[in-house]
Image (cartoon, rainbow, N blue to C red; front, side, top):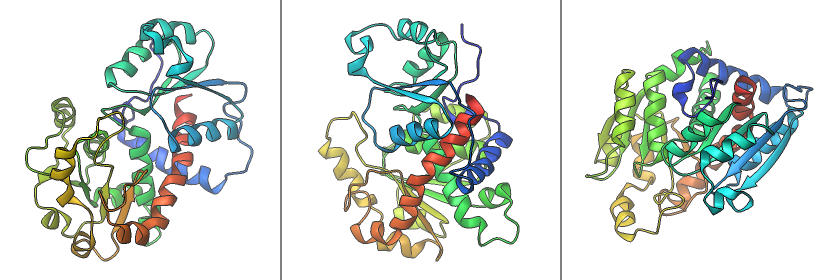
Length: 310
């Protein structure tokens, strides 16, 4: 069985390693275009069972910039799409590749692959977690906040934040919960009554001393927020659920939310955005420079992750 290091959730890094990733991301961003061939000669597979723009391109570009060879495979390209067991595919690909990035459905699916693949595995998104995105989000916040702090110490900046997530209890909400357990900032999840975080996610957070609040009042949740963030209301691979959207619609991020946050509040969205569903057109466009900086930062943070894992 596989004993190499993987990145399947933020829990695969220590707190110190997460801060090292953030600092290294800043260096890689500043030095982009310089010579770094840490993946020279390495063949990195990208197995994507879900469609992607930012995750696929940022990982592919990052591999190329590090001198490696990205090999993209959709489920249509593999026998996985015809029912071959995940463990069989993993055991075959481990004889060809030096590492794999997977974007798939159940967390159990990527964990099974990692058990049988004899090289490192990185999570490019599952239904449970999106760890590369969440490290990008907190890096983007740190990048902005450190410029206004006399001492840009990452732990001090991030540990004192109030971050409020609006919307569904999906993989991004779960990822914020997991990151909070590691870094200790204040986290509020603003979502309708009856929406709950996955029990396994809550238990993993609790074991690590994590704490978060669920609020059914979006205005009070936003009070004094340093960061407000959201995701699409219906996650990829789910059927359109009108009843669910109707419940979530009152939690749209609008001017009332922004006015109750801090004056220098940061708005994040992992994209793609559904304007006037999870965020109003006006609020999104007002904060769009940060959102698209966040999108670019996927490249730099994921390069730092790959440097560590591969």
